[in-house]
Image 1: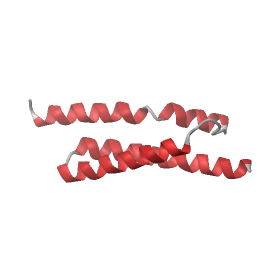
Image 2: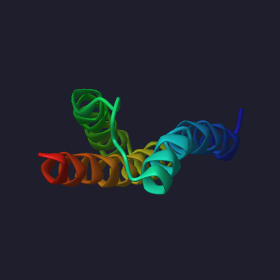
Image 3: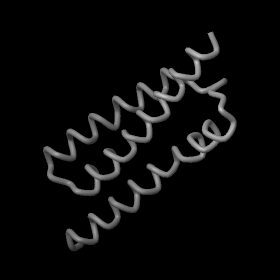
Image 4: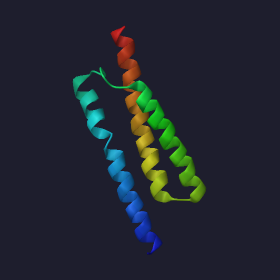
Length: 90
């Protein structure tokens, strides 16, 4: 199989995985509440996508780099909202 098709599959998989975080982000944004959202889970996910990003650089895979970079940014945004909201609630 051609490498361009392989990268297209990787980009598609990365896109689908990445947009999986948007429903939670939208719910947090609209409700203004982070109740029931696990901060630890998002830190673990951030660590995982960071390692995938590093791996993507090592193997020079555009699909892994792009999808994990964007997923990491989304997770950082969610983590920031959780921390800010929890400080306000105290």
